[in-house]
Amino acid sequence: MTTGILSYIRSEIATTLMKKYGFSQSETAKLLGVSQPAVSQYIRNIRGNKNFINDDEVRKSIDELAKKIAEKKPGGCEILKDFCNICKLIRKKGLVCKIHRSSYSLSGCSLCYE
Image 1: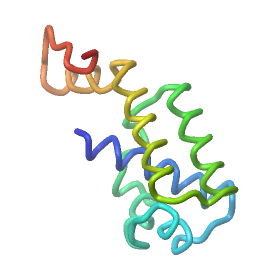
Image 2 (image 1 turned 60 degrees about the vertical axis):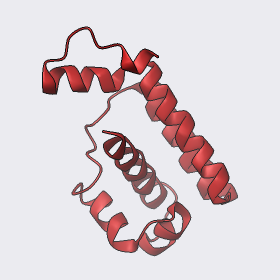
Image 3 (image 1 turned 30 degrees about the vertical axis):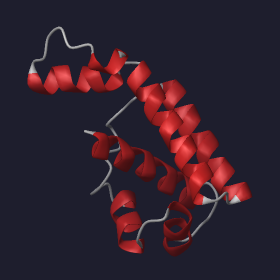
């Protein structure tokens, strides 16, 4: 599931960098530390399901990170820290639990809240 979250975040950032800030697939790939084919798959919704998480606060955090990447082009460590913060937000809000519960009929799980 963690891979799904990271792919979702990368997909959203890649899409924003290209559509809002005009970066090419190659530039976006370099900024995100992924391959150009991966960015192509993000844009075509083959990788990083766009409907994975629907939450305004998460969306705002992703948009802020995309803006930071576009304007400041921070190093990998800084980007990673912001990725982690978005993952923590998703976990804190129990959004992964909702997905797990609907997919696997889990009851009583509180792992995301620990």
